[in-house]
Image (cartoon, rainbow, N blue to C red):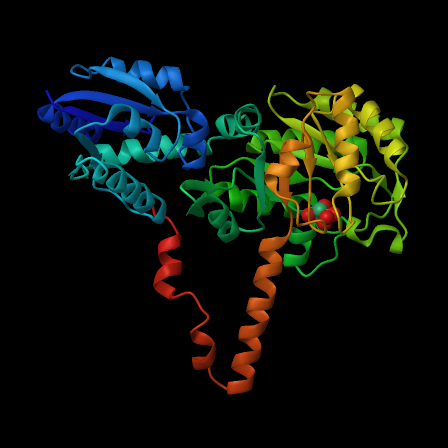
Length: 431
Ligand code: SPV
Ligand code: MG
């Protein structure tokens, strides 16, 4: 009897999936692969059920002979092990990532004469509603808030990109690349105080108030599902910080990072060129304690950011502070540097990891940007934040266009650098 294989990357089974299974069964003995959690994440299908729960769900479907885990999004190992006569898939190869997967399947099947069978995707109201519900569930505060915790358990490093508007949120949500036989995307979003302020034409000195910062958060929450890490600057007065914690967790934000500075905060990348005061570590620890006491959910994270390296106070001071902040209940440590090389960050992380193997470490490689994610993960770092690149990309592009229109007294010359109106419209989801 011919053998048939299909891979499912879904938390729910709807009519469309059942139709694929029915068609597949007509061809022979059917094995279904369930994509593992880590690969589901890379593929923009954050699982709301675990791999084993998803396997149980498929086992209950009559006529499925075997259920197995597919541990990479590309089919290489599964095809080389099973050598199925047919691979069955819906014909909804909508984006570049899906097209890459299709090409991968075809080239593997061509090695021995196997065949890809493409089943027309079921488009009807009930299927579309279930697809939408699956996505919308991810956007709900209770679900979104805990997602960062889950990612920290599942991934070697959580890749976080700066967003400052609904549109940049959409970019973080939807940008997927297929390269070197793998698919990749960002895991989380960073709401930077620098970029949120700059976007409003204001300096990064805690001038933009929380009401305005929350409006930015809300714009992003409305159109995305990925977890949010909020840049809380110094956290302000302890008595105010507790309210900020409550508001953020209610909105579904996953974490706030507060930095151990006091007085008029300036951006860290100015370092010692401007006057900046580091807080007394015990006083800052009190703020962390108050925040942890105020929070209601288990999964909201308060991450302490240490400015000792920024202010040239050295590694020993940073390590001492890290111990105090973890003791006070910090759920993670962010260590910042403005050096051109990652040496002091690597040195701190290695020393920290010798004494603490569990507290998540966060870094922002804006200046020491040659270090790769794999290298950071090898130093025990759990979250990397690309803190300002989207804004810095947008400004020169807009300035260039503005100058071109002024110089040419028309928009024609600028047009070839611009995204078409059609493309920009299709970026925006309609309900
Ligand atoms: C931000 O993005 O606002 C940060 C990181 O706090 S940095 O600008 O490097 O201080
Ligand atoms: Mg900031």
